[in-house]
Length: 107
Image 1 (cartoon, rainbow, N blue to C red):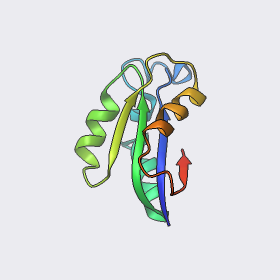
Image 2 (tube, rainbow, N blue to C red):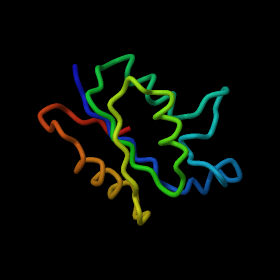
Image 3 (cartoon, one colour):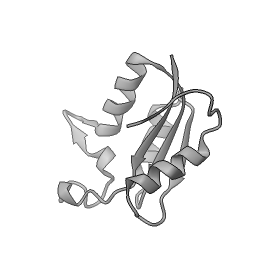
């Protein structure tokens, strides 16, 4: 099964402070690797991912890391300029999906 994936990752992660003072919550390391790896590894174990839309916020660390580490994936990035919540981030991501004929998963 093929899917599109939207990852809303623009929040400020205030509950993760001080770990998230200088990085996105998706880049906080758990067992030695960034959380974004757990998401991308898990989804690719179960389905074929057509495209990934990552909606990020204040930091560019997710983009830089994913562009280096996940080169085989079709990833598009969008910036959520105003942090108005996950609903808005999902909407931003949905507007960028090219092939709307396949299911979209929000993680």
